[in-house]
Image (cartoon, rainbow over all chains, first blue to last red; front, side, top):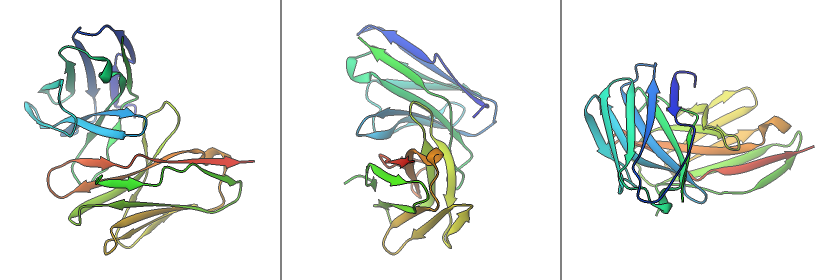
Length: 112
Length: 110
């Protein structure tokens, strides 16, 4: 969706380094999500936000933290990257449980 | 047990064929249901929402069976451009979390 931008699109980093992924939306959606997608697992929720400064954990939150200081931006931080965090990360936004999610175009992260 | 389960396929069908995918979910209190399409190395894109009475969009028909806890997607007159992975998505009433199936791979063959 044109209204959701992820940066960077690709990143290669070394084990132990911190990494921050950014999601920016112009949709004014209340809810924002970070998912990771891996072969055989599909999309798994890392963290989500239901408003500015309001966040909660998903099913695979260990090793990740998030922040949402304004409606438009949702940051995902890997404090100390590990090889198991090599994945494709998708940001999504939504307006509530009865509305579909809209996705950014993804960030491909490789941890060496 | 996974919250949402799909047959991963792959489904290889000839052009013009009709193909159906099913998806089962574990939480009977599930609130909303969707089908997404994902092309290789791209983000998932909404194909259609699934309504209780069933709904159709051109060659695509989605149905919901709450008693048996599954949703289905029917594609008629398959086109080469339908080749993709199809993801079912369920939102449970508890919390605003969306659960994804692992996807079903479809290849339409000329």
